[in-house]
Amino acid sequence: MDTRVRKNPDLLIIVSTLLLLGIGIVMIYSASAVLSGQKYGDSFYFAKRQLLWAIAGLIMMYVMMNYDYRKLKQYAKPGLLLCILLLIAVIIPGIGQVRNGSRAWLGIGSLGIQPSEFAKLGMIVFFAHWLEKHQARIQEFRRGLLPPLLIVIGIVGLIMLEPDLGQSVVIMGTAILIIFAAGARFKHLAGLASLGIPVFALLVIVAPYRLKRIFAFLDPWAYERTEGYQIIQSLFAIGPGGLLGLGLGRSRQKFLYLPEPQTDFIFAILSEELGFLGATTVILLFLLLLWRGVRTAITAPDTFGSLLAVGITGMIAVQVIINIGVVTGSMPATGITLPFISFGGSSLMLMLTCVGILLNISRYAK
Image (tube, rainbow, N blue to C red):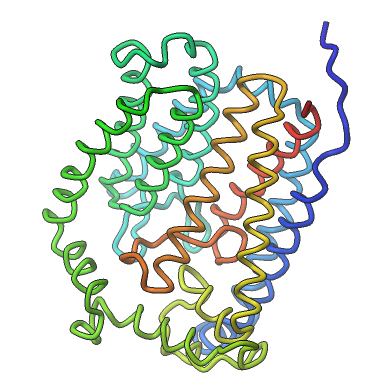
């Protein structure tokens, strides 16, 4: 008999998520008003779509907040299999949609989902369930570490066929965090890292556009009209923001200087309009969310819940670090959205669903 007592969900997770979501919708309108007005004749084009996805995502968050996370175990294998089938389907010409040079979407016209986004959750649930069952042998390489590693390599391989290096890095980073939290030996993970670095280098070298991104990261001004253009415009946005910003809605870079400012580089527009204080506030809200996520993982009543919370929190952390790193010129461009802030239906739906699961785990925390 289940003797656990269900409590109220973690209030700080709810508050930080809703604040980030609200800031995101406002900033999407501000960042995209010029582009959407010129392209679609409606300055609210992107904001309205993000609002619809936000409503759907909040419904999913509420549902998952009240759905016992332990029941997700029964969907671990079929859920992962479905995600793999969708990843296979999306790379088939005529089925997957090509956007920005990557065949990563399924859908009709502008309505579509990105299977790689949902593969993150499928992998997290499966890994949490598998590692709970086999935690006793996680310190063995062949029987403990190798099976989940082969699975994540397969998923990453399918995503690289789209190709999408950014999502691959997020999935691999999240998987390593879950495996580490489950008790894998550090020397095994260090050995994998030493093998992964040359593999990553090879993936960069075999794709000329990725190599150019690395060169543009090292010296964007040498590629100011090509691969370095976006990061230069991003820095032109962040710099003038100063302490307090130019004011909400007063960005200059959104006037078709910074391409697609409502997506991956929205943090640059936010920094320009709201300044250092606004950008710092957003970062602090993410840190609050991540802190409560880690606390939920530590106080979870079982291993499955703990690893599930680690995976969700780790995934959000990896995306935030990569996105802000790219926007500020600290990392090469990868095409990763900023959770809850950037425009993107699949990403927002996934994130809010994951937060719902995290909230449900927090209801049973010790």
